Length: 116
Image (cartoon, rainbow, N blue to C red; front, side):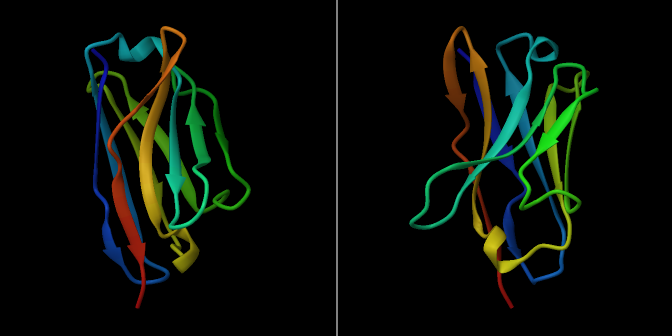
């Protein structure tokens, strides 16, 4: 049973930074690309960033490019999202995601609130 557990969310002022973590277990983490999605209140869930299985390739949504960095540590089965220069529009629940055995797998999410 794939397990994804996000942490690191919280309240931060505009311009601030947060680092999210997603601890993965019960599958061969190093064999899978991983992604972060987010869902703001009243909006659809959107893809934020993806990292390849080895970490050598990353992609970002235009809205976060240059501000967010996705990374992973395959020794610790963890994927990270470093978020800098946060804006109020980054407020959302952030979810860890992978596609495993042909099925989408999600964590329960961690709430990020950007507000003064």
